[in-house]
Length: 115
Length: 111
Image (tube, rainbow over all chains, first blue to last red; front, side, top):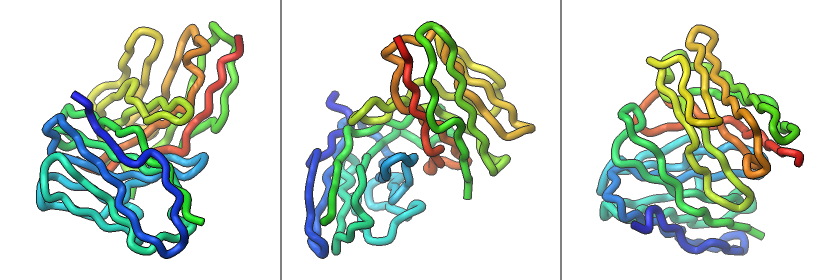
């Protein structure tokens, strides 16, 4: 199993550009998440999904959109990039919710700079 | 929502000594408390976790304690080694999907 795979690893955007961060998992996990990590800070939840066709907002959803058309894929879209979105983005997944005995598995991250 | 505070922000220890990181949480309904280790430029990796029905859990040189009354939990690393140098994050969850993370502790183990 490859686990959770994120692409690209690095990206530089100009203000106002758009892009999609890709995330795919091959563990047949139902739950998927997008977090952002700002320098010297913990992770903040952007969006999450409990299954194909279902998405919901986390703590910091403004400026982002997601979709979950398949169990495997959970792309994150930035429509109008702003400098405040400069961060490291982590995708994660789990088979079931955290109140069960499930663990969170993280992807390797995407470092995004908006200039 | 849940608020997790983590102390200290940096910790330097001599190899072989112990390291202790403490976290407090605000919502007494939180029931799952994982700890993650993140090496420079890498993804967070789960190293140990504890649920609210347990007071202490050990895994070799790592242990976590939970005090539900005081709403705090701690990570203990004994016999520290250079490979323990990393950023450690605590987190708390009160539902199925949302983990609230602390700001992290940078641990440096001096040889």
